[in-house]
Length: 266
Image (tube, rainbow, N blue to C red; front, side):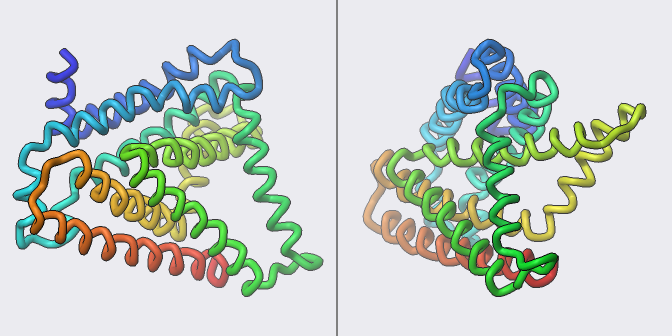
């Protein structure tokens, strides 16, 4: 039954999308009695199925050596891993948003993290003005730290970067929940669907580049970990090292551009 589900996920990403939402919501229901730090427990519970799914998909990819050696472009060779991380991330945002609506009292760590970000932004401002250069340095340093964590977690733990992926998804999901709860309206669709959607779109100009940077860093680490999981020949290993370096450099570039957009444009 489990193997059948893995095969279905491989050929139908919609299943992975809805399964990811279900995992987060189910983990939320299991954590209802856990108190204000339930947001951490939700991530911990969700990690178990996500890591299993991720590792099983890698184990079942029997043609990985052929894909790596293929002359197709870098992104095509690893598109399954990239798409899979992308789907889990955005589905988890929705899942955590629903979880926040179920019981917002569980998400104190996420709410505190959001408040810390707001306080840091205020601390960087003088009067009502935020100096772009200072803000750029702050954003770039924070995002580069997260990027390095994604990369190192992926190398050491294989699918370990999923924890960071879920944590960042939970921050955004709770942020959307806060925006919805702050808006006073009797129109349920406007309050709980339109407002969160608009809020998500507001962070996309720089957010999508940050997400891409994190995913590429995680992918760079993941393909290195694949080299340890799979019994690959020397040529394949050399290609993996080259691809990993290229992906890591690209991830840094995306993070740098995202910081520029957030500091100087948005």
